View 1 (cartoon, rainbow, N blue to C red):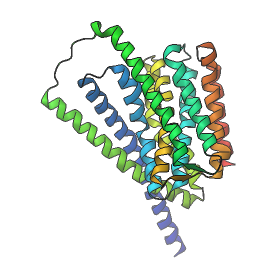
View 2 (spheres, one colour):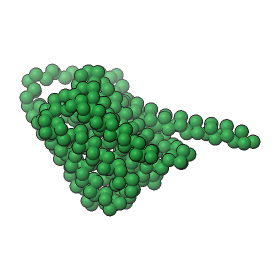
View 3 (cartoon, rainbow, N blue to C red):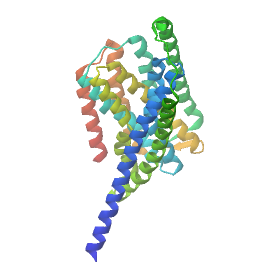
Length: 328
């Protein structure tokens, strides 16, 4: 009898793990399809590629974090929602940017990089300060929205400058065929569906895993879920490394982090009724870790105008240390 119960528990656990992984796959593939569709829509409508890369790409790659955190709040999994948003930033910088800089240290364009990096660091500091009371009230969180709006405004301004300089050299666009239009719009819709369904599976079975394994939901949020929802950024970074496009990788990560820090949790605060509860782990460990890796990543290029390979080693080491503290 006990053996039979043991087999049933093992089968149930296997099903939970399978559905959790299925959620990750749907989010990653859905984000990929959404990104392709969004880029095509932007290009076809005449929006310059600069804006596509600086805004649409970053927004698309952060959709998993946004949908997972919002779904978590709606289902009462506040720790998972908050842990996912903050943990995604730490994963983006410590793990993904660490890999990028380690493989491909590069010089930055200060005109395009400086304000965006400062806004990212300021967003992290502001979020840390606002959460110190154990909650994120809606009205103060509007300051984070202001940072996000400034980031978007800066991208639009840079895009206009870029458009003015290369308008004469831009190739003429041709109207897309009906078949291609249907294909791309279908890809866009399927991508959105994949993200929504995948986030639902991730929340439900991430929480179930936390319960079965005796791990707090907040830790699951800043580890498995956070890394899983950062996979679009990781895929973009690995592709950029293969194509030797360091600026695309760094720009996507900085943009994604600005969105994670200044948009996701304020939206969650509004959905939760005006004040989002912030756990002790988030204020005592997750946010400080986010600030440390952010400073190590952004301060050297702000001062010297370049990323260094030692930063890659340092960021990966800090991320491993952060994981070790979570599991201690």
